[in-house]
Length: 121
Image (cartoon, rainbow, N blue to C red):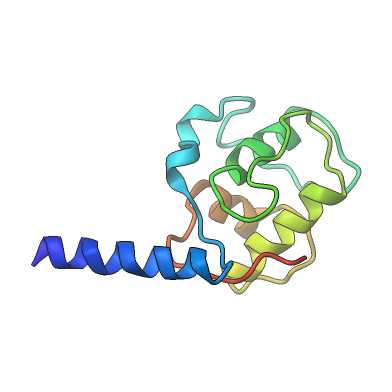
């Protein structure tokens, strides 16, 4: 039974990849491997912000698929990061405003494994 579930999951992921749909990839990083700030330090971040908290959010967002698959860990909340954050918010039914606070921090630390929203072009 367990093997069947894994085969079904694998087939679903392959189908999603073939269709150009993206899913979170937790194997890329683990929340505990992102140690630029304490997990309890969750300030509100917006486009244009810089610093260690932005670097933490970049690291956490790299657990997700989409394009780019990995953001540079430069601590700059640029337009590429804004696009990725909006996509992650949409995967969780959050307002796609690109502002990282409360609920967005929560999903960055605990990504859903079942989001197959296509990454915006």
